[in-house]
Length: 233
Ligand SMILES: [Ca+2]
Ligand SMILES: [Ca+2]
Image (cartoon, rainbow, N blue to C red):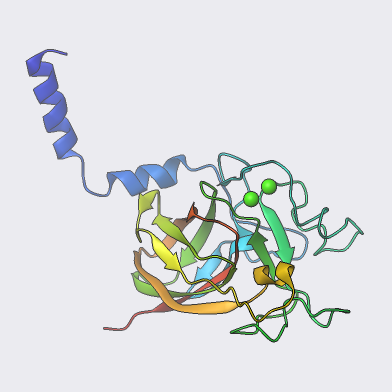
C-alpha cells in the first residue's frame, strides 16, 4: 500500500463513528433468542433474571462455542426419557443439566454445603471449559448501568468475562471457588451453589443487546443465571 493510500485508509478509520462496532455486530449477528414449546418469552428481559441455559438459537460458531458437540448433561448424565428437563437442548454442544432436589441416597443441589439454595429444576450450563462461550440476546427496558448478581458453582475457582454487542465489557471476572473439603462426596463439589452479588456492572442500550459469556480460565463452573438490576446514581 502506498503512503498516500495508507494515510487515506488511516484517516477513514479515524472517521468511523464510535458506535460502528456494536451496530455492525448486531446487524450481522445471526443468533436468535431462545424459545421452545415451554419457553415462549422471547429475548430475556433486563431488568430481570437472565438464564444461561436460554442462550441463543443458532448453533456452534454462531450462538456458542463448545469444546465438543456432545451434550454431556441432557441425554447423557440425564438419560433421554422423554421429559423436558432431561432432554433440554439435547442435540446442542453446550452441556446442560438442572438443579435436582430431594434425591436419594444423597442430596444433590439442595445439599447442606450450598451457600445459597438455588431454585429447583433450574436448567444451567455446566461442563464448562476455557475457550467456550455463548450468546444471550436480551431486551433492555431502559438504557442505563446494570449490576448483575450471578448464581453459580465452581469447584476450583476460575474467571469468566462478558461482552456486550461484540465488545469486551467486563474484563476477567474472578469466580470464587465453592469447594468445601467438609463435603465427603467428591462429585458434589460441582453442586455447591453460591450467589456472587454484583459480579459486574455494564452499560446497556435500550432494546436489543447481545451478551457473550466467555469461560476464560479453569472451567468446571456451573452457570445458572445473571440477575440484572438497575444501578441508581
Ligand atoms: Ca459439549
Ligand atoms: Ca462444554
